[in-house]
Structure formats: structure tokens, C-alpha cells
Image 1: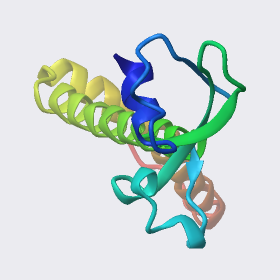
Image 2: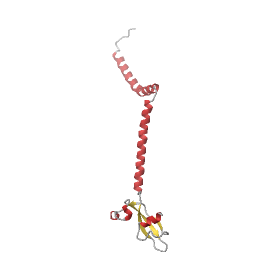
Image 3: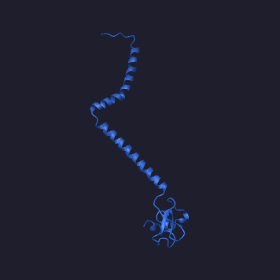
Length: 142
């Protein structure tokens, strides 16, 4: 049925012989500007070339419409991958926020201590060093 339908878009009488064999002989491609009005280009604006061999006759070439070119498939795959990356990034952000929000007080404090202990200890060390140098002349009274 596909070969008969494909051949029906070709020359007059091409689709009338049910034993006619048509094979795709090119990839799906965009129709040229001069072909835009042709029957096979009217539906999608794309065409694929067929080579048909009716029994007892010479082979001829015809065209039929096709849905997607290789470039269309590439863009569809890239669009799908971009959507998956966006969904994955959004999921990562949501999971991290929920994990932080639902953390126990101990986990929050230990996380805060790890991130702020280095900066806090270095600032404390700097302030004690400056105090020691400024209070060198003072004597501690107990």
C-alpha cells in the first residue's frame, strides 16, 4: 500500500499497477523553490525520490512527500536533550533545597560549622595576634 501511495504522487498512471515496485533512492529533503506548487511538495514542503520499476517497462523516478529531513531529526534530538538537561537541573535544585530545609538541627549546625569554621578561626587568630602585640606592655592581674 505504501508503494502504491508513493507512486500515486508521480507521473500519470504510475500508481495504477499494483505490482509496481518503488524504492526510496534519496533522503528526505526540502523542496526547491520551483517545486513548491507540485503535488508531492504541497503537503509538507519536503520530498523523497523514488525509483519505480513496473513489470516489462523501464524504470522511472518520481517523488512523494515525506515528514522530516535528517536536519529536522537532529534538531528534535537536540531539543529533547536540552529539555532533559533543564529538567535535571531543576530537579537538582529542588532536591537540594528540600534536603537543606528538612535537615535536622545537628546537620545544619555541623554544615554551618564546616563552612564557617575556617573563616571564623582565621579571623579569631588574627584578632588574638593583634591583641597580644598591643597588650605586650600590660601585666595580667589575677
